[in-house]
Image (cartoon, rainbow, N blue to C red; front, top):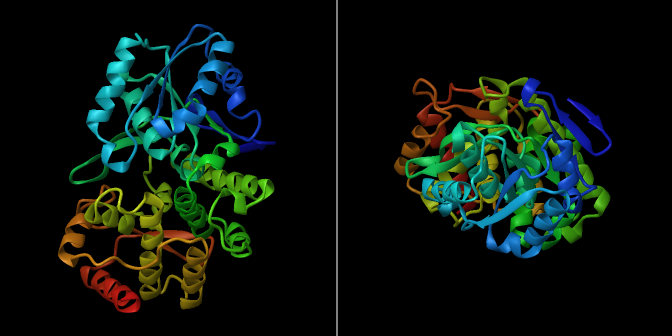
Length: 372
């Protein structure tokens, strides 16, 4: 991984690309697409949703037309419940109507859900066309847009249908966070905390110095840029070391084994993804104490930080048997063993598949007794 100014190179051989943070922003999208190697008159399908398109859709179309591209905008329904194969069919239909060819391009303009769906649609249209990520939520900027994971949900679990398909460019304009609802901003901060726990203890300490954070305006431009760059660096370094998640990349799933089960059982949308991950990190932190991976003091620091960021930390009232069944359907299960990502102190993590059902039951009992 190399970094120059606000550009972070993701070196993946012929799949390499840049993560551009800050300037030129959305107004420079057309020129950045050119720099990524696309020729004039390239057909481009922009995938977004109503809320995001209202603010940024026409700007993206204008800058692409100014650079002599041929863009078309399609809107998909937002929300985790709409992250389905039916939505992918809508994108495929639009690709057919716009006559996308193998050298055409899709652009995801929106949050992680739009990015995941657009990437999967691109991976499966004509056996794979290029796509670019233009994330407009904090969660998508620091996590979902980088690394090439794409997909949709199945009734049996989250992201069970998908493909690895690296983008050709990730263009992050921090100013789009101005229109992000406070709840969505706080949910994105959960993924930032994740990087602090599993990879970057300096980032974690910096987050602890912030006063209560509720929305984008509570942080300075310098603080936002620092958060974005440190998070992106962490994600890029892990992805480059293990692109297809054969091993160490799994540490990026810290809090997700518990969190995905919470999302599924409580109903997609009742908890935002980042909110469920925050609860999942508290649970994983409790499990890590049981397994002697870190101390109670470190777990308390994580809990305090999550609360200070306005994130939920209380374990929901859910049936354990239903929860256990959901854990077993998680895509990270290998040879019947549930894999958990547990912190080993602040700034490091490990993959564990030696956690018994009894240990998980004890962990949930501790959490339930603590919060109810």
